[in-house]
Amino acid sequence: MSITAQQSTAVPTGSWNADRVHSSVSFEVTYMGLQIFRGEVKDFDASLVDRELSGSARIASLVTKDENLQAHLLSPEFFDAERFPEVGFSGTAVETAGPEVAFEGEITIKGITRPATLTGVVVGPVEDPYGNERYSLQLDTTIDRTEFGILWNAEMPNGTKALADDVTLRAELSLVKQA
Image 1: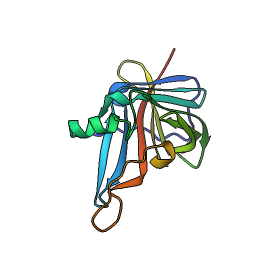
Image 2: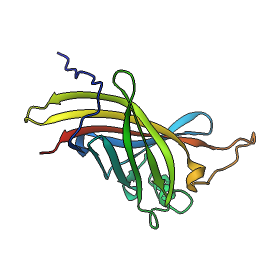
Image 3: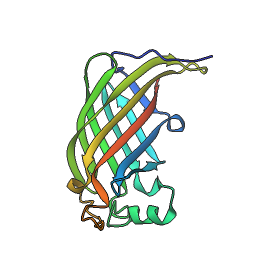
Image 4: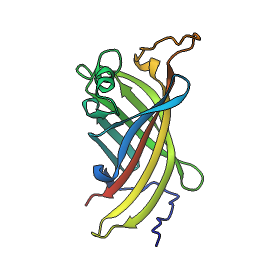
């Protein structure tokens, strides 16, 4: 048996909050030119109010597969979590063809705010088994981490950088309508 949700052509109006159990916020970056390194932020909030999306993620909740690397990412060489405990986004929806959507807005990392566009799809609505109305937003954007003061790198023997400057940020949000 398969369960599918109908893709929507509109971003819902009203007030919606992310169900954190069924949502995720993550990043990925190319490392050593070979593979994708991924991390996830476990403590975050996101809401959609009358087609305006906002969210914040607590950097201290960053999870990777290596505790030492996690500590390095929280250090001043990367996110400087002690001085800048949150990453944030705020934006408004601009619809495109079919289920595709774009949120034009701003991302703030390490106290530096830059314009950004989150693109992806809207899926829903569905009614869950408990009578709640839900939508899904599956969004991502690519930023240049150096524009936010995240400058650490190491040189490879061939002279290239170990860590790419472009980082993909991803939010997979299960949004629940608020009364």
